[in-house]
Amino acid sequence: MYLERTVLHNEIYFAPASSFNDPFDCTVCFADETGTDEELMENYIYLARKHGPAMTDAELRADAEQMIADPTRNPRNQTVRNTIQDEHARVVRATTGIYCVSEIPDDILMWSHYADHHRGVCLEFDGQAKLMQHAMRVTYANDRPQIAQYDSNVVKLEKGVLTKSMHWKYEREWRLIRYTQGPGIATFRPENLTGIIVGSQASMKVIQLVRKLNKARGVPLKLHKASTNRSTFTVDIQEIAS
Image 1 (spheres, rainbow, N blue to C red):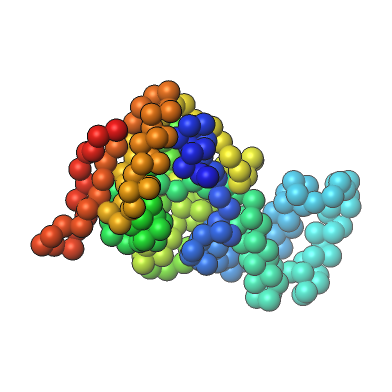
Image 2 (image 1 turned 180 degrees about the vertical axis):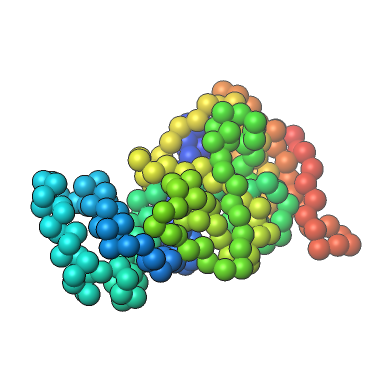
């Protein structure tokens, strides 16, 4: 179980965006190609040299010229651009590992969506420790971002992986991202994990499990319990015995 692996073995799982509940996550629109033929070919050669099969400079140049001349390959063609865009989204969503965290521990919808309808738990990490120092803030927008040919890598990162619809603004999300290693398990220092909040609808069995794992952990955590407020639509969080 993920909770045991995290609490006792200091492991977290970087998931692919293809497993997320937002179908727009890590998908972008490609802006219309406005460069000259020469600029398009230079960009094509750069990408082909980086991602394609081994070819000589002369072969790359000849292939780029054929791409410009062929309407079924030229990215100025909307159909071609759509195909490239779809493939870009498929690759990014399958090969990029992402670990999502939030600034807030008491949002009702977050507990409903990500903690088994308030029956699960919320993990608390030290936001100033080394692990979370690598986290990047998600921004929220009304319009889908468009990647242009000459956007910097930083801009492409912000548009492609760190921008979500305004509908998700309430999440106040930050992300740890793994491009090279991709989805999978990663370890962290024990002191990076500082606490566990048990959901307001969690069973006694869950509470007992959390206490059992905490006692078996080398670096004990602070334990908290969420509860539904009696007079407002809010969740209260109070510390409980470990």
